[in-house]
Structure formats: C-alpha cells, structure tokens
Length: 61
Image (cartoon, rainbow, N blue to C red):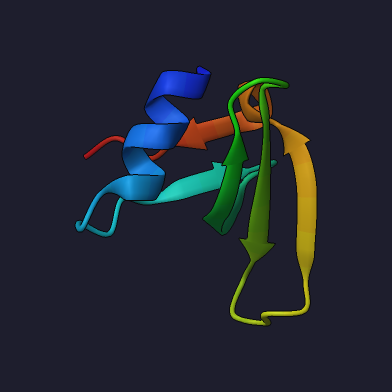
C-alpha cells in the first residue's frame, strides 16, 4: 500500500480491513513524511507496531 491510501483508510469513517503479514490490523497513525504507520495488531490495544506502509495490504472485497 502507498502512503496516500494508508491516510485514506486512516481518515475514513468506514471500517476498511487491513492486514500486516496476514494478520488483521487497525491503522492508529500514519507518518506521511517517513512512509510509516503505527498499527494495532488484533484486539489488544497494547500490541502496536510501527512499520513501513508498503508492508500493509488492504483486504479487497
């Protein structure tokens, strides 16, 4: 995924499924300047990772 799409998903009012290495994640923050995103893995709010947005995949319907 690119930074623009990550920002679109982050700011969307819709719930858009995103995966990181096959696991469902929620985008918590996008650092547009550095191409990074902080994501919550699963349902545990303390399980967050900061990764390159290129590692994120949008789950297509």
